[in-house]
Amino acid sequence: MSEFGSIGLENRIAVFGGVFLGLGLVLLFILFFWILRRSRFVQEKEEVGYGGLIRGIIFIVSILCVVLGAIFFQMQDYMRPFSEWIHPGQVLSSEKLIGEMTSETLKDSTANLFLNTIGKKGEIFKETFEVSVNNRYGLVVEILIWEKWLKFFGFVDGYKLTQLDVFPAESSTAAIKTFELSGGPAEGWKKIYGLRKILPFVKPEELKSEIFILNPGETKKVYIKEKKLVVE
Image 1 (cartoon, rainbow, N blue to C red):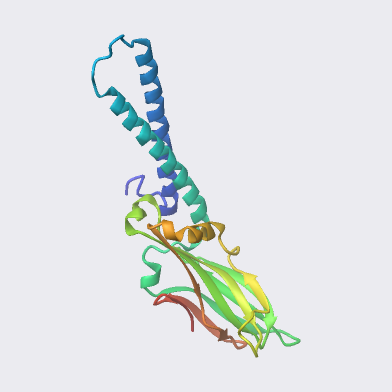
Image 2: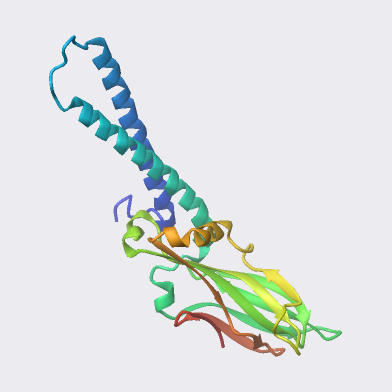
């Protein structure tokens, strides 16, 4: 495998950001010295040519490269919260097991709720919450779906479980407690979601599971399946 091929997909974004930024700065440097040299040797009657057009094209390309570099570095920052849960494929078009939940009874009608989230390389991330034994629950997951051709640059589909809602036994309209998962909602995802109508190359999704019961000693698996967040 080539050295470039061994670079992690999510790290390629920074690599291409550096390439575009460097190329843009080099082109601006060349353009500056071209204009400086021309100003020293300018003739009273300049010959007709395409120098001005070429300089204009170089300037536009250099600015585009600098802008692309800045965008790539910004996107890498947005992708960082998803880096442990990168999924190499269309997350919404296939069944994906992303974790499991288990409940264990404690004293005084309380229970420990264990959430194990499965990372991109099979790592297990464990979180524990203390709840009432008669509570009901709901999960929220944030998803980023990129156009397939962007995978070459390091943009791959990712998901992030961000929220566990706790509901009382008699109602499912308002949560009585909310736990942030995996560090909480991703600010980058929020920004992309806010700009989703003008970003045709990325599709952010927020999926919410149906309200479910987890009895003491019971284990449920969490899937992204058929464009839904499913707990079963």
